[in-house]
Image 1 (cartoon, helix red, strand yellow):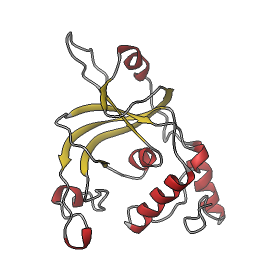
Image 2: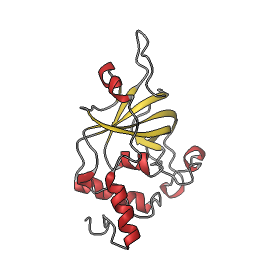
Image 3: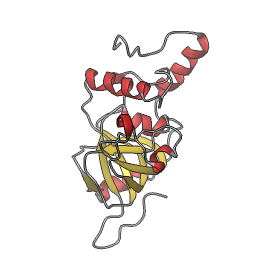
Image 4: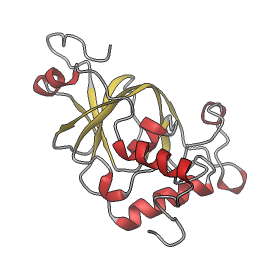
Length: 192
């Protein structure tokens, strides 16, 4: 279990803030590397905080990157930008390793660790935090901050609750739409 008693003099859990749809990809699309411009020596449990901000251009560019990198095959099942959970804790995981920047021929990632996931979520010019034990949580509104911060006791007290199956009702609607032959929820070419 991620949440443990916090020993005197230290915090056992950190909070990592990020933007959607990247947290959605970690929780629901198999993304197991979180890219950052900075490194960390921390290894251990983290809470995934979805920042409030997510502009349409950021959302569109993130989905286009995922499609170009072949880490998702379609945008079916990806919630619309306005339906993404933001401004709070959406999941938990453990940082188990960090992949260093590693641009190879053509600017592609050449890391054995990153490539071992079958699809490379690693952006080769950045550090890649390797994640394990990823799990969605019930949404908990929480103000985030940049960096890797200690999780306060009052937040940890709210975490030990059962996870919802996928965390996004929109996924179920999207799967029903797919079965009905309807159009994807998002078209990366038009941005709608």
